[in-house]
Image (tube, rainbow, N blue to C red; front, side, top):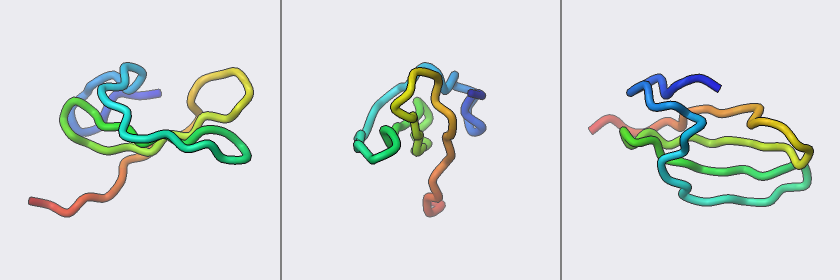
Length: 61
């Protein structure tokens, strides 16, 4: 995984977990970066690293 595109915080060092949800294929987690960016991550049930992560759209202040 890469660093946060907004602030550079290492994405493998999750700052805050907002929620986790079990699915038939794995676990979906919504996390918040130190800068406030919210991301959705998916980790399959088999052993390994997170395979996808993406930012969520937020309205501009």
